[in-house]
Amino acid sequence: MQTAPVLGDAEAMRAIGAIREELLRRGRAAVIAVADSHGELVALLRMAGAPLESGPIATNKAFTAARLRKPSRALGESVRTKGHDTAWYGDLRYLGWGGGMPVVVAGQVVGAVAVSGLSQDEDEELAGIGIAAALAGAGEG
Image (cartoon, rainbow, N blue to C red; front, top):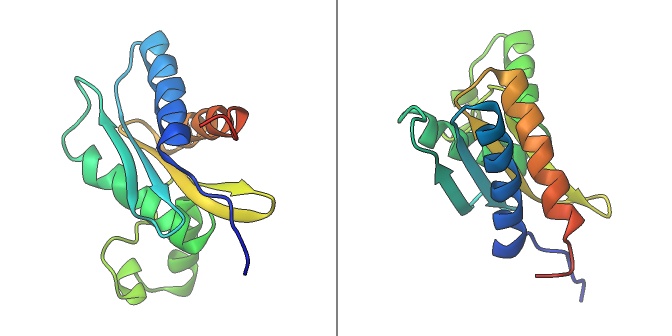
């Protein structure tokens, strides 16, 4: 039997905490979502002042990054190149906007962190901060 690393609630909370701290430092607000390797939500934070529509968007970015095992932005780039939309994947949760990033441990995707509410580049940068925080404490929670 194989065992696999798991992105749990402790790692999710470290990711959310680090991203929240950075957003507060910048005087900004966003929604932060963390999903497991199946794309299912582990944790979600909608900061005060974040756009309401960013909640489902962050959740779907995390779903996409976890399920496809690559950044959510890659899906958008791919479907534009192929000339079809994300509905082609058969699940409306797939989203091709930047901001969802897979969390990789020992070459295996264990989940995803996503941010929504800012530009795609800022969302991705912040997701990276969350991933680093989650992985920095791996094995502690």
